[in-house]
Amino acid sequence: MTHRFPRHGILGLLLIFWLCLPVTLYPTRTVSAATSPDPALPLTLTLVPHLHHFKNGLTLVTVNDPYSPTLTFQIWYRVGSRNEHRGRTGISHFNEHMMFTGTKKFPHGKLDTLINGVGGQLNAFTDYDFTAYFENVAPDKIDLPLAIESDRMTHLLLSPDQVERERNIVLEERRNDYDDPTQKLVEKVYSTAYAVHPYHNPVIGWERDIQHTTRRDILNYYRAHYMPNNATIVVVGPVDERTLVKKIRTSFGDIPRGRLDKARIPAEPSQRHLRMTVVRKPAMLPITMMAFHAPNFRSRDAMALLVLAQVLSGGRTSLLYQDMIYRHPVAVDAEGSYDPMTADPGLFYFYAQGLPKTSPPLLKKRLDAVIRKVRTTSVSPDLLESAKKQILTQFVMNQESAFGMGMLLGMMSADRIPMSYLTNYVQNIQAVTADDVVRVARSYLQSSNETVGYLFPTGPVRRPSFSRPGRIVR
Image (cartoon, rainbow, N blue to C red; front, side, top):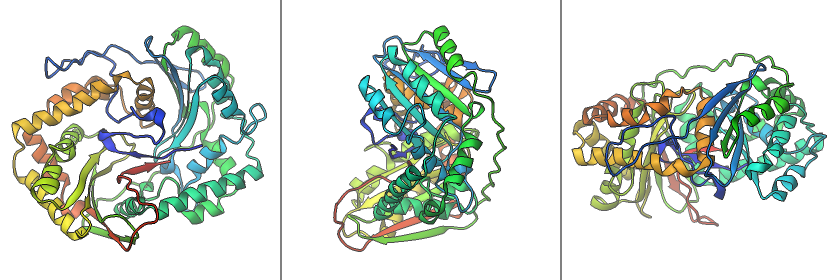
């Protein structure tokens, strides 16, 4: 019952599920009106999130969108692979699978039948920082997700037979990742870039850990994290706020607050030397991936890094694309991404997929040349303004997705991102200068802070495909 998507920074949060296609990591709506940098670019955004807090610690975020034909009901638990320990990696994702295997009230298979019966959709996903479940239904069917999510917050059966069934499914997903050369490269780059922080581990977990996770492990993990004071419900669509608050109180109010142990997440030490990793697998084309440690939303540099990412990799006018596809044609694709919306500092990465006979070191040479240019040469006013306009245009374009709005607010709650991130977003992007872009490039795009991954194709693949590098969320 899971799906995968690359958490692709501000350039896009693409779920491999048709319903989620509009979602990106740009703010989809803000909580207040903002002034447009361009009279032709309307940025007056009026839908306002409202927060409600219940006695048992549950948080509710509502957005009344009277024009949305559907309603999205999402519940976000502040637990993901970031919270896992050595030997039990992948347990967050394993538990997510088990959340679909049944309670006494909703036996295995019943959820699909009920949601499909009202023309809705449901699914879930696990990330480094959170696990989320959602139902998209007609507004008058909201009682169904309320019943489902309140029940499985506390009454999961975890049948031993279902544990083994889902274990086999998860192991098959794990092996598919291993067989995918691009995702194997991503996995190697992350595990090389992070020495002690849990971002070192793939969200799906290591195969050995999946094999040895027991029903008791999952039950203990479920009881330790699935509780109202570790959850946020997000509802976006045509909602009557007062009625919804009463319904939430009726459905979830009697679930007691749990004892939530403080997460002990080891801080990643500063990287001081270049790191490298190599993957040799059957693949269509060579790939070079370069990743640099970068701060998250808490840093004053976050907005400048967003603009830098757009300048370097924001489409065909970007520096990477112009250099590697047109002026020095060595690649068929060259992109990058930076995602500030993470609980802990993440990675600013680039990749290039080379032409058939191009070597990964040659791709790195061209990537280095572009990085050197942006570190030493001021970005042209036209390119800077184009990058900002692209960011803010995407900001506006994503307003129409109720699901996307829910995703944005859910991630903010899970990662404890303040609402000021949204209220100040437009003006903070506007305030980035060419000097800021050069400054952050010099600060973070340094070889001592760099991890390089090479994919050397060893032969043709049986089923040719290409999935873009990026964080893989299950």
